[in-house]
Length: 134
Image (cartoon, rainbow, N blue to C red; front, side):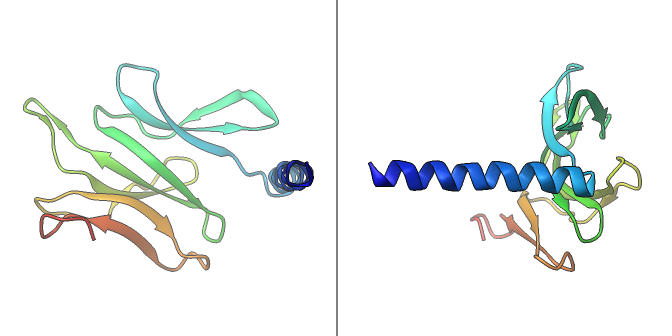
C-alpha cells in the first residue's frame, strides 16, 4: 500500500515538474510519425496540442529525436531512402526549428540511438562499425 502512495507521489512530482519546465522554457515534445507517407520528426507544444511543427521533410526514415536544452539543437537518426530501399542509419543534428541539418556520421555501417551529454558538448551513440553494437 505504501509503495503505491510513494509511486503516485513520484509520478505527480515528475508530471508537475515537466509541466512547469515546459512553461518556463518553451520546451516542446519531439516525436517521429508517418503523417505524409514518410516518417519525419515533429515537435508539439504540450500546452497547445494544435501547434505541431514538421521538422524534417524527406523520403528518409527520420527517428529517435533528442533535444539539447543547453544548445537548442536536436539529434536524430536517419535511414536514407533510395530506389533499392533504406540504407544505413546515420546521425544528424539540426536547429530546434528544423533548419541547418548537419550529417555527423558516415560510412557503410549503422549508427543509432544518439544522445547528448548533460552539458550538451558531447554526443554518445551506438555504432555497428565492426558488425556488433558498441
